Amino acid sequence: MSSSRNSNGFAHTIELIRQAGIDIYCALDYQSPLFMPAESIERALSQALIGRRFEGENKTRSKLVKQAVAGALGYPIPTRFKRSVCHFPSQDLHIHSQKASNLQVYNREPPPARRYGIVAIDESSCVRKVRVITGENLARLDRNGTWTKKFQATSQVWPARSCLVSAVDTPRVRANKASLLTVSDLYEHLMTLIGTSFDDPGANKERVRADMVHQLACGVIPNCTFDDSGQFPDIRSHLVEVKFQLARTIDLGLVSPDDVSPIDGLPPYLHCDVRYAVFFGSKHRARIRLDALVLSTGVDFFNAFRRMGGNVVNRKRQIILPTSFLA
Image (cartoon, rainbow, N blue to C red):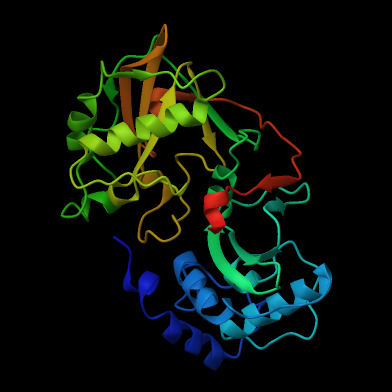
């Protein structure tokens, strides 16, 4: 579903940036041919940085890494960097040089669409891994469950009843019907899970339960493989975000379902094109049972669910990166 710009041709884009002569502070529209998808940035930086040594104290090492990033992406290398909430406004890219797993966010909530380049440096000061993800997906890496849940909704009907909210997909999804199941076909496949039960992983294991339901959903969707990468949406090959609820309140994360911003790495889709599969369940002793499914596009989401007002602000200053993220 991704364009060739995602996986191939990033060297050509870098050459275009070099020829344009722009600096890292020149803002680009996301539709600009010079604006690189996160996947392409990750590949370019991995190719340029892995194995290189960056020595010095934290501040010195951070500057050297940022200079190397600028050169790798085709920009003139700055001798100094402006104080800014985003190191590379041209690519909406912020860089973190990490020798430890605690990623500092300094009391500032990351914009969902901003890209975060995480450069992992080993004890010998050599780069061993580079990852680039959006702020939205960075928030999903917090396995403690204490990251800000900016958007929430609640079921208008309780107990919830199974319902296909959207009769048709959005125009962008319908234009790619050859590669995507329709929302009505998805509903038929996912409804086969209603009545299914599984062992309850225990108290305060909401994320584990959600992962188990995600895996069950992948099992009934044709040509679908479970991938717990933490990216949005959960099932990128079918543009499906899976939610599992034991109560009527739904945590939606940093982006509202009806948001019209693009999904990084999945052109031409917008967040509002995603199909939300919201499963409701109940506890029965040591088992969890799936009782109902509500399936909706992001556009129609708030026809079925009530948007909850107010933002819960959690002033968390750091996120512990999972071991597998930089493995």
